[in-house]
Length: 400
Ligand SMILES: [Fe+2]
Image (tube, helix red, strand yellow):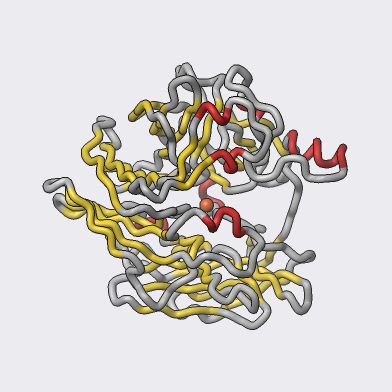
Protein backbone atom coordinates (compact mmCIF):
# COMPACT_ATOMS: atom_id res chain seq x y z
CA UNK A 1 0.00 0.00 0.00
CA UNK A 2 1.42 3.34 -1.03
CA UNK A 3 0.54 6.94 -0.28
CA UNK A 4 1.56 9.46 -2.89
CA UNK A 5 0.44 13.09 -3.09
CA UNK A 6 -2.79 12.42 -1.25
CA UNK A 7 -3.63 9.29 -3.22
CA UNK A 8 -3.63 5.68 -2.07
CA UNK A 9 -2.43 2.77 -4.20
CA UNK A 10 -2.68 -0.96 -3.58
CA UNK A 11 -0.58 -3.66 -5.19
CA UNK A 12 -0.53 -7.33 -4.23
CA UNK A 13 1.56 -10.21 -5.47
CA UNK A 14 2.36 -13.61 -4.08
CA UNK A 15 5.97 -14.20 -3.15
CA UNK A 16 7.29 -16.69 -5.67
CA UNK A 17 8.70 -19.06 -3.07
CA UNK A 18 9.06 -22.80 -3.50
CA UNK A 19 6.11 -23.18 -1.11
CA UNK A 20 3.93 -21.02 -3.34
CA UNK A 21 4.98 -22.80 -6.53
CA UNK A 22 4.44 -26.19 -4.91
CA UNK A 23 0.95 -25.15 -3.77
CA UNK A 24 0.08 -23.94 -7.27
CA UNK A 25 1.10 -27.26 -8.80
CA UNK A 26 -0.64 -29.42 -6.21
CA UNK A 27 -3.69 -27.19 -5.81
CA UNK A 28 -3.34 -27.06 -2.01
CA UNK A 29 -1.08 -25.68 0.69
CA UNK A 30 1.73 -28.14 1.21
CA UNK A 31 3.84 -26.27 3.76
CA UNK A 32 2.28 -23.98 6.28
CA UNK A 33 4.05 -22.17 9.08
CA UNK A 34 7.41 -23.86 9.55
CA UNK A 35 6.83 -27.18 7.97
CA UNK A 36 8.41 -29.69 5.63
CA UNK A 37 7.94 -33.36 5.15
CA UNK A 38 11.57 -34.37 5.00
CA UNK A 39 14.52 -32.76 6.65
CA UNK A 40 17.97 -33.77 7.73
CA UNK A 41 20.84 -31.99 9.41
CA UNK A 42 23.05 -32.96 6.50
CA UNK A 43 20.87 -31.11 4.01
CA UNK A 44 20.64 -27.43 3.30
CA UNK A 45 18.13 -25.30 5.17
CA UNK A 46 16.11 -24.90 2.00
CA UNK A 47 14.72 -28.34 2.82
CA UNK A 48 13.02 -26.69 5.76
CA UNK A 49 10.54 -24.18 4.39
CA UNK A 50 10.56 -21.16 2.12
CA UNK A 51 7.35 -19.68 3.46
CA UNK A 52 8.36 -16.12 4.43
CA UNK A 53 4.97 -15.04 5.73
CA UNK A 54 5.69 -13.49 9.13
CA UNK A 55 7.41 -10.15 8.81
CA UNK A 56 9.34 -7.71 6.63
CA UNK A 57 12.51 -5.69 7.10
CA UNK A 58 14.33 -3.07 5.03
CA UNK A 59 17.98 -4.11 5.18
CA UNK A 60 20.77 -2.55 3.16
CA UNK A 61 18.14 -0.77 1.03
CA UNK A 62 16.47 -4.08 0.23
CA UNK A 63 12.92 -5.07 1.13
CA UNK A 64 13.06 -8.52 2.71
CA UNK A 65 10.27 -10.94 3.62
CA UNK A 66 11.03 -13.03 6.70
CA UNK A 67 9.88 -16.32 8.12
CA UNK A 68 11.49 -18.17 11.00
CA UNK A 69 14.13 -20.05 9.06
CA UNK A 70 17.37 -18.90 7.49
CA UNK A 71 15.50 -18.47 4.20
CA UNK A 72 14.51 -14.85 3.48
CA UNK A 73 13.31 -13.37 0.19
CA UNK A 74 14.15 -10.05 -1.42
CA UNK A 75 11.19 -8.22 -2.96
CA UNK A 76 11.24 -5.27 -5.35
CA UNK A 77 9.56 -2.57 -3.21
CA UNK A 78 7.96 -0.89 -6.26
CA UNK A 79 6.74 -3.82 -8.36
CA UNK A 80 6.55 -6.42 -5.55
CA UNK A 81 8.29 -8.86 -7.88
CA UNK A 82 10.25 -11.58 -6.12
CA UNK A 83 13.95 -10.96 -6.73
CA UNK A 84 15.26 -14.09 -5.01
CA UNK A 85 16.76 -15.38 -1.77
CA UNK A 86 18.21 -12.69 0.49
CA UNK A 87 21.59 -13.97 1.56
CA UNK A 88 23.71 -12.62 4.38
CA UNK A 89 27.44 -12.97 3.90
CA UNK A 90 29.35 -14.42 6.82
CA UNK A 91 32.10 -16.84 7.70
CA UNK A 92 29.80 -18.94 9.84
CA UNK A 93 30.36 -22.70 9.68
CA UNK A 94 26.63 -23.29 10.16
CA UNK A 95 25.38 -22.74 6.62
CA UNK A 96 24.26 -26.30 6.03
CA UNK A 97 22.43 -26.96 9.27
CA UNK A 98 18.87 -26.44 10.42
CA UNK A 99 18.40 -22.95 11.73
CA UNK A 100 15.57 -21.14 13.50
CA UNK A 101 15.67 -17.34 13.30
CA UNK A 102 13.60 -14.79 15.17
CA UNK A 103 11.05 -13.27 12.80
CA UNK A 104 11.52 -9.99 14.70
CA UNK A 105 14.99 -8.75 14.03
CA UNK A 106 15.41 -5.45 15.89
CA UNK A 107 16.77 -2.22 14.44
CA UNK A 108 18.73 0.08 16.73
CA UNK A 109 17.12 3.53 16.21
CA UNK A 110 20.48 5.28 16.72
CA UNK A 111 22.99 3.16 14.77
CA UNK A 112 20.36 1.56 12.46
CA UNK A 113 22.15 -1.78 12.86
CA UNK A 114 19.94 -4.88 12.96
CA UNK A 115 20.19 -7.57 15.66
CA UNK A 116 18.86 -11.10 15.54
CA UNK A 117 19.22 -14.50 17.17
CA UNK A 118 19.68 -17.81 15.39
CA UNK A 119 19.23 -21.20 16.96
CA UNK A 120 21.41 -23.68 15.12
CA UNK A 121 20.33 -27.30 15.53
CA UNK A 122 22.76 -30.16 15.15
CA UNK A 123 24.90 -32.66 17.00
CA UNK A 124 25.77 -29.64 19.10
CA UNK A 125 23.12 -26.90 19.11
CA UNK A 126 23.78 -23.20 19.64
CA UNK A 127 22.19 -19.85 20.25
CA UNK A 128 24.01 -17.34 18.04
CA UNK A 129 23.33 -13.62 18.45
CA UNK A 130 24.40 -11.54 15.47
CA UNK A 131 24.39 -8.03 14.06
CA UNK A 132 23.98 -6.64 10.54
CA UNK A 133 25.64 -3.23 10.44
CA UNK A 134 23.90 -0.40 8.60
CA UNK A 135 24.62 -0.44 4.87
CA UNK A 136 25.99 -3.99 4.91
CA UNK A 137 24.68 -7.46 4.22
CA UNK A 138 27.07 -9.26 6.55
CA UNK A 139 26.32 -11.27 9.66
CA UNK A 140 28.68 -10.49 12.54
CA UNK A 141 28.52 -12.88 15.48
CA UNK A 142 28.25 -11.17 18.86
CA UNK A 143 27.55 -14.09 21.16
CA UNK A 144 27.31 -17.86 20.91
CA UNK A 145 26.33 -20.47 23.47
CA UNK A 146 26.01 -24.23 23.24
CA UNK A 147 22.51 -25.32 24.33
CA UNK A 148 21.27 -28.87 24.79
CA UNK A 149 17.53 -28.18 24.63
CA UNK A 150 16.86 -24.87 22.85
CA UNK A 151 13.74 -22.81 23.61
CA UNK A 152 11.34 -21.46 21.01
CA UNK A 153 11.82 -17.70 20.71
CA UNK A 154 10.18 -15.21 18.34
CA UNK A 155 11.46 -11.79 19.43
CA UNK A 156 14.15 -10.01 21.45
CA UNK A 157 14.70 -6.62 23.08
CA UNK A 158 17.52 -4.15 22.64
CA UNK A 159 18.61 -1.27 24.86
CA UNK A 160 21.49 1.18 24.51
CA UNK A 161 24.01 -1.39 25.76
CA UNK A 162 22.27 -4.75 25.84
CA UNK A 163 20.30 -7.45 24.07
CA UNK A 164 17.68 -9.21 26.21
CA UNK A 165 16.45 -12.72 25.45
CA UNK A 166 13.47 -14.38 27.15
CA UNK A 167 13.66 -18.14 26.64
CA UNK A 168 10.39 -19.85 27.66
CA UNK A 169 10.32 -23.49 28.78
CA UNK A 170 8.97 -24.53 25.36
CA UNK A 171 11.92 -26.67 24.40
CA UNK A 172 13.01 -29.09 21.75
CA UNK A 173 15.34 -32.05 21.74
CA UNK A 174 17.38 -31.33 18.59
CA UNK A 175 17.59 -35.05 17.84
CA UNK A 176 13.83 -35.02 17.28
CA UNK A 177 14.35 -32.58 14.38
CA UNK A 178 16.66 -34.92 12.51
CA UNK A 179 13.88 -36.37 10.40
CA UNK A 180 10.80 -34.20 10.42
CA UNK A 181 7.50 -35.83 9.55
CA UNK A 182 5.30 -32.95 10.72
CA UNK A 183 5.43 -29.23 11.47
CA UNK A 184 8.62 -28.12 13.20
CA UNK A 185 6.79 -26.48 16.12
CA UNK A 186 5.13 -29.81 16.99
CA UNK A 187 8.47 -31.12 18.22
CA UNK A 188 8.69 -28.52 20.97
CA UNK A 189 7.47 -29.62 24.42
CA UNK A 190 6.15 -27.45 27.24
CA UNK A 191 8.00 -27.97 30.54
CA UNK A 192 6.09 -26.20 33.35
CA UNK A 193 8.69 -27.45 35.84
CA UNK A 194 11.44 -25.40 34.17
CA UNK A 195 11.68 -21.63 34.72
CA UNK A 196 11.88 -19.08 31.92
CA UNK A 197 15.52 -18.21 31.27
CA UNK A 198 16.59 -14.59 30.89
CA UNK A 199 19.80 -13.45 29.18
CA UNK A 200 21.24 -9.93 29.14
CA UNK A 201 24.12 -9.70 26.67
CA UNK A 202 26.40 -6.75 25.96
CA UNK A 203 25.77 -5.64 22.36
CA UNK A 204 29.41 -4.82 21.70
CA UNK A 205 31.50 -7.31 23.66
CA UNK A 206 29.06 -10.24 23.64
CA UNK A 207 29.60 -10.59 27.39
CA UNK A 208 26.75 -12.30 29.22
CA UNK A 209 26.15 -9.71 31.95
CA UNK A 210 23.14 -11.53 33.40
CA UNK A 211 21.66 -15.00 33.24
CA UNK A 212 18.72 -15.71 35.49
CA UNK A 213 15.21 -17.00 35.70
CA UNK A 214 11.63 -15.97 36.13
CA UNK A 215 8.51 -18.10 36.49
CA UNK A 216 7.45 -20.31 33.56
CA UNK A 217 5.60 -18.34 30.89
CA UNK A 218 5.28 -18.14 27.13
CA UNK A 219 5.86 -15.06 25.01
CA UNK A 220 5.91 -14.21 21.33
CA UNK A 221 6.41 -10.45 21.45
CA UNK A 222 8.55 -8.02 23.38
CA UNK A 223 7.20 -4.46 23.57
CA UNK A 224 10.29 -2.51 24.61
CA UNK A 225 13.19 -2.43 27.07
CA UNK A 226 15.41 0.23 28.60
CA UNK A 227 18.22 0.69 31.11
CA UNK A 228 18.37 2.79 34.24
CA UNK A 229 21.72 2.58 36.10
CA UNK A 230 21.95 -1.05 37.25
CA UNK A 231 18.49 -2.16 36.17
CA UNK A 232 17.02 -3.22 32.87
CA UNK A 233 13.24 -3.07 32.40
CA UNK A 234 11.62 -5.29 29.78
CA UNK A 235 7.93 -5.10 28.85
CA UNK A 236 6.44 -7.99 26.91
CA UNK A 237 3.21 -9.87 26.22
CA UNK A 238 3.02 -13.15 28.14
CA UNK A 239 0.78 -16.20 28.41
CA UNK A 240 0.66 -18.81 31.18
CA UNK A 241 1.75 -21.49 28.72
CA UNK A 242 2.23 -22.19 24.99
CA UNK A 243 -1.42 -23.03 24.19
CA UNK A 244 -1.72 -19.85 22.06
CA UNK A 245 0.33 -21.63 19.37
CA UNK A 246 -2.38 -24.23 18.89
CA UNK A 247 -5.19 -21.66 19.12
CA UNK A 248 -4.74 -19.96 15.75
CA UNK A 249 -8.14 -19.66 14.10
CA UNK A 250 -9.96 -20.21 17.37
CA UNK A 251 -12.35 -17.63 18.82
CA UNK A 252 -11.43 -18.74 22.34
CA UNK A 253 -7.88 -17.47 22.51
CA UNK A 254 -5.72 -17.59 25.64
CA UNK A 255 -5.40 -14.08 27.06
CA UNK A 256 -2.08 -12.33 26.63
CA UNK A 257 -1.21 -9.74 29.27
CA UNK A 258 1.38 -7.02 29.70
CA UNK A 259 4.25 -8.32 31.86
CA UNK A 260 7.08 -6.18 33.20
CA UNK A 261 10.42 -7.78 34.03
CA UNK A 262 12.89 -5.77 36.08
CA UNK A 263 16.42 -7.16 35.98
CA UNK A 264 18.77 -6.00 38.71
CA UNK A 265 22.24 -6.38 37.23
CA UNK A 266 23.97 -5.53 40.52
CA UNK A 267 22.15 -8.06 42.71
CA UNK A 268 21.65 -10.44 39.77
CA UNK A 269 17.93 -10.80 40.45
CA UNK A 270 14.71 -10.52 38.49
CA UNK A 271 11.31 -9.19 39.51
CA UNK A 272 8.38 -10.15 37.31
CA UNK A 273 5.19 -8.08 37.49
CA UNK A 274 2.41 -10.01 35.77
CA UNK A 275 -0.62 -8.26 34.31
CA UNK A 276 1.06 -4.85 34.75
CA UNK A 277 -2.08 -3.01 33.57
CA UNK A 278 -4.93 -5.10 34.88
CA UNK A 279 -7.54 -3.63 32.53
CA UNK A 280 -6.00 -5.12 29.40
CA UNK A 281 -6.23 -8.85 29.04
CA UNK A 282 -6.19 -10.53 25.67
CA UNK A 283 -3.62 -8.33 23.95
CA UNK A 284 -0.84 -9.10 21.49
CA UNK A 285 0.85 -7.70 18.36
CA UNK A 286 2.32 -4.71 20.23
CA UNK A 287 3.92 -1.76 18.41
CA UNK A 288 5.54 1.43 19.65
CA UNK A 289 7.00 4.63 18.25
CA UNK A 290 10.21 3.04 16.92
CA UNK A 291 12.27 6.10 17.87
CA UNK A 292 11.71 4.87 21.44
CA UNK A 293 13.20 1.40 20.95
CA UNK A 294 15.64 0.77 23.80
CA UNK A 295 14.65 3.94 25.67
CA UNK A 296 12.14 4.83 28.41
CA UNK A 297 8.76 5.20 26.73
CA UNK A 298 5.17 5.89 27.61
CA UNK A 299 2.86 4.37 24.98
CA UNK A 300 2.31 1.16 23.14
CA UNK A 301 -0.39 0.04 20.71
CA UNK A 302 -1.75 -3.49 20.40
CA UNK A 303 -4.68 -5.63 19.29
CA UNK A 304 -7.11 -6.88 21.93
CA UNK A 305 -8.54 -10.32 21.06
CA UNK A 306 -10.67 -10.66 24.19
CA UNK A 307 -14.01 -10.55 22.35
CA UNK A 308 -12.66 -12.10 19.18
CA UNK A 309 -16.01 -13.75 18.39
CA UNK A 310 -17.64 -10.30 17.90
CA UNK A 311 -14.73 -8.05 17.02
CA UNK A 312 -11.14 -7.23 17.90
CA UNK A 313 -9.99 -3.79 18.98
CA UNK A 314 -6.99 -1.51 18.76
CA UNK A 315 -5.75 -0.39 22.14
CA UNK A 316 -3.43 2.41 23.12
CA UNK A 317 -1.84 1.91 26.54
CA UNK A 318 -0.21 4.65 28.61
CA UNK A 319 2.11 2.52 30.74
CA UNK A 320 3.18 5.41 32.97
CA UNK A 321 -0.34 6.34 34.08
CA UNK A 322 -1.77 2.85 33.38
CA UNK A 323 -4.55 4.23 31.20
CA UNK A 324 -6.01 2.64 28.09
CA UNK A 325 -8.13 3.91 25.21
CA UNK A 326 -9.53 1.77 22.39
CA UNK A 327 -10.94 1.78 18.87
CA UNK A 328 -13.42 -0.94 17.93
CA UNK A 329 -16.55 -1.53 15.91
CA UNK A 330 -18.98 -4.44 16.01
CA UNK A 331 -18.17 -7.14 13.45
CA UNK A 332 -14.90 -5.43 12.56
CA UNK A 333 -11.60 -7.25 13.02
CA UNK A 334 -8.43 -5.20 13.19
CA UNK A 335 -4.84 -6.08 12.36
CA UNK A 336 -1.61 -4.94 13.96
CA UNK A 337 -1.58 -1.11 14.34
CA UNK A 338 1.60 0.38 12.88
CA UNK A 339 2.65 3.73 14.34
CA UNK A 340 4.05 6.47 12.08
CA UNK A 341 5.58 9.43 13.88
CA UNK A 342 4.89 13.05 12.96
CA UNK A 343 7.03 14.61 15.67
CA UNK A 344 10.48 13.96 17.14
CA UNK A 345 9.27 15.43 20.44
CA UNK A 346 5.76 14.14 21.19
CA UNK A 347 5.95 10.35 21.50
CA UNK A 348 2.37 9.72 20.44
CA UNK A 349 2.01 12.48 17.83
CA UNK A 350 1.41 10.56 14.64
CA UNK A 351 -0.96 8.10 13.06
CA UNK A 352 -1.77 4.42 13.28
CA UNK A 353 -2.34 2.22 10.24
CA UNK A 354 -4.39 -0.94 10.57
CA UNK A 355 -6.07 -3.17 8.00
CA UNK A 356 -9.61 -3.82 9.20
CA UNK A 357 -11.92 -6.59 8.03
CA UNK A 358 -15.65 -5.81 8.00
CA UNK A 359 -17.29 -9.19 8.49
CA UNK A 360 -20.80 -8.07 7.48
CA UNK A 361 -19.63 -6.64 4.15
CA UNK A 362 -16.87 -9.22 3.69
CA UNK A 363 -14.62 -6.29 2.83
CA UNK A 364 -11.43 -4.78 4.17
CA UNK A 365 -10.16 -1.23 4.44
CA UNK A 366 -7.06 0.55 5.61
CA UNK A 367 -7.92 2.50 8.74
CA UNK A 368 -5.92 5.61 9.67
CA UNK A 369 -6.26 6.74 13.27
CA UNK A 370 -4.94 9.73 15.17
CA UNK A 371 -2.51 8.01 17.54
CA UNK A 372 -3.19 10.48 20.34
CA UNK A 373 -6.97 10.12 20.46
CA UNK A 374 -7.61 6.95 18.38
CA UNK A 375 -10.13 8.97 16.41
CA UNK A 376 -10.57 8.01 12.78
CA UNK A 377 -8.82 10.35 10.35
CA UNK A 378 -9.49 8.46 7.13
CA UNK A 379 -10.08 5.07 5.61
CA UNK A 380 -9.38 3.61 2.20
CA UNK A 381 -11.38 0.69 0.86
CA UNK A 382 -9.37 -2.24 -0.40
CA UNK A 383 -10.37 -4.11 -3.55
CA UNK A 384 -10.59 -7.45 -1.72
CA UNK A 385 -11.03 -8.79 1.81
CA UNK A 386 -7.83 -9.39 3.77
CA UNK A 387 -7.99 -11.90 6.62
CA UNK A 388 -6.19 -11.60 9.91
CA UNK A 389 -2.44 -11.33 9.37
CA UNK A 390 0.80 -11.00 11.25
CA UNK A 391 3.27 -8.15 10.81
CA UNK A 392 4.17 -5.31 8.47
CA UNK A 393 6.22 -2.15 8.28
CA UNK A 394 5.97 1.42 7.05
CA UNK A 395 8.91 2.60 4.96
CA UNK A 396 9.12 6.35 4.22
CA UNK A 397 10.04 7.50 0.72
CA UNK A 398 13.23 9.01 2.10
CA UNK A 399 14.52 5.50 2.86
CA UNK A 400 14.59 4.45 -0.81
FE1 LIG B 1 5.54 -11.84 15.64
